[in-house]
Length: 225
Ligand SMILES: C[S@@+](CC[C@H](N)C(=O)[O-])C[C@H]1O[C@@H](n2cnc3c(N)ncnc32)[C@H](O)[C@@H]1O
Image (cartoon, rainbow, N blue to C red; front, side, top):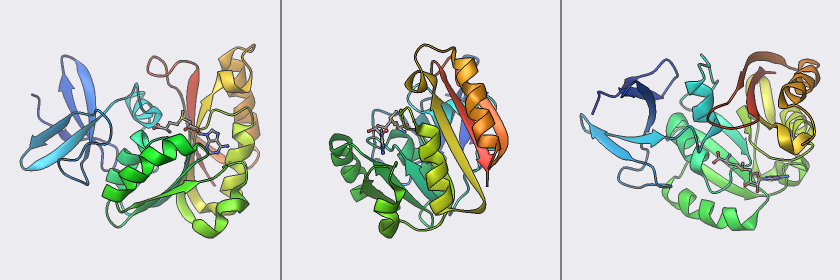
């Protein structure tokens, strides 16, 4: 097993295996897994392997994004948490002094997320519609960073509404775009261009990456308010 070392991304670690780069975060809850991730111990530190095929944020890093915006101690609004795969790595990154508000509309995935939150005290599950941010405004606060991974036709509108209500000035906002949810008939590249035009009106885009081959027809925008 190759040595796990710090990567260029804050609180994210990497190792080289058979010419592949593997990503890791330090497990906030040693010996406890969230999904079927591999746990590896080196120098008395337990790392969790971060799979780019299951997490668009990991894919973004492996596609070469130099700054994903997340820092230790950040307060995060995560929209479209599902059962907590990526949320759990964000929870590792922000650490015990950071916090993640994890929003999802589906009761089924929320049930699984609640078990993750029982172990990880820096995540609060919020069962709500991200399209109606005012409906959960009393359960969240101003945040340093917003991450959105929601497969809805109006995903850009949802993103902008939440930025307006929750993101501090100069805060980062990451949008995972699923082209096929916006329009199945259009070329994803054209959809990404259209999304870029809309985002540019109110945000500074600091990075953009298509996420192939890890995530088909998806891209990620990293923006600043
Ligand atoms: C692709 S999955 C998210 C995967 C997750 N981000 C991860 O990496 O582990 C998209 C999630 O968005 C949720 N979702 C869809 N529409 C939503 C809405 N209007 N408000 C909140 N969550 C929504 C779905 O229930 C689903 O769990």
